[in-house]
Length: 123
Picture 1 (cartoon, rainbow, N blue to C red):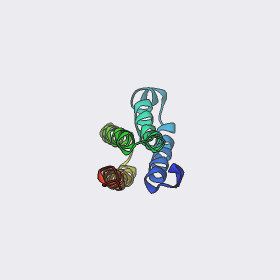
Picture 2 (picture 1 turned 120 degrees about the vertical axis):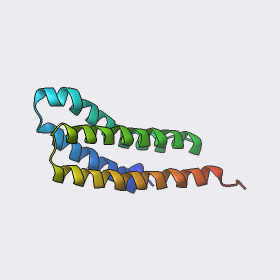
Picture 3 (picture 1 turned 30 degrees about the vertical axis):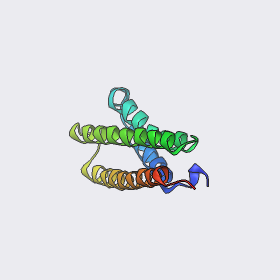
Picture 4 (picture 1 turned 90 degrees about the vertical axis):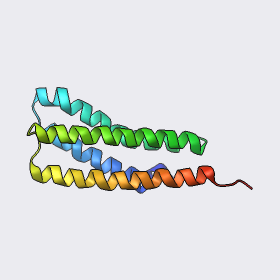
């Protein structure tokens, strides 16, 4: 299996593309302040999944998946700020929030599965 085949990776890539397209429509100040940080945070989700996948031990992998989850939480904060500052409308906000919640659940399940593998007895 390749990391590109992981559902959690695909979902994170799709969400980062959606956010990129939102931020592209903003003016310079909005992009330079909130936009850059939001894009960097959401891009880190898939980047950490792929980096973790390339590690040799489940413990190392899980560390990067935790970083990924942290970046997802940070990115959700930028979503909230974008909404509060009227940079996205209610419809887009709700759609993105749904995507964040689905990805969060999938990422937690993925981390739990790696933890089970990490804790499985070796023969």
